[in-house]
Length: 190
Image (cartoon, rainbow, N blue to C red; front, side, top):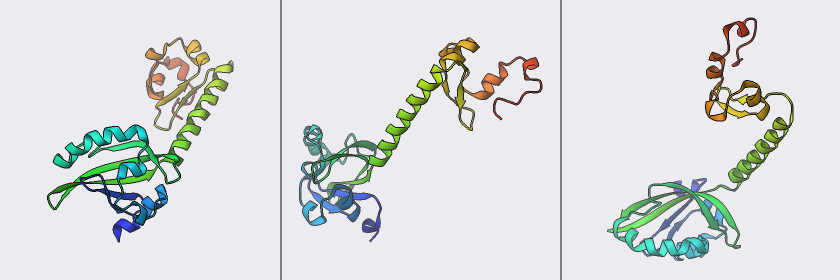
């Protein structure tokens, strides 16, 4: 019941590489009904061609020891849906010994929305930098903790620091301001 209720795909592979467990979330993420997935070769079912050679090479060692490069790791990789479309997934992989044989248990989360949000954020940052670098004002951006995220070219020119010399946060920058220049002014962190 716990496996079926999990919001993440839970897939188990036997020592021969065949699917032995495939929950409802895995069905939803990869679009293979349980009945089509159970008993099929896991990597033939959901791994893009570029991963299959490595899997075949690693399977004998996994079957013997329960270890592999991704076992005990959380990794991001591509998976194939039933329609052949690749999607980004986050995979946490573990091994378990059952009846004297090693089985792999993978927890799969569709990372498509996260990857799209990351791409949109990177695009937004690039547009922000383009606009900020094009203006004649000096712009320095930091987060609520005071960690520096962006310094415009004009700001660096006005201050006279190179990137490697620039204080990494607002507090370090404020320490470099002459005390007379701080009189009656708000803190950089306010």
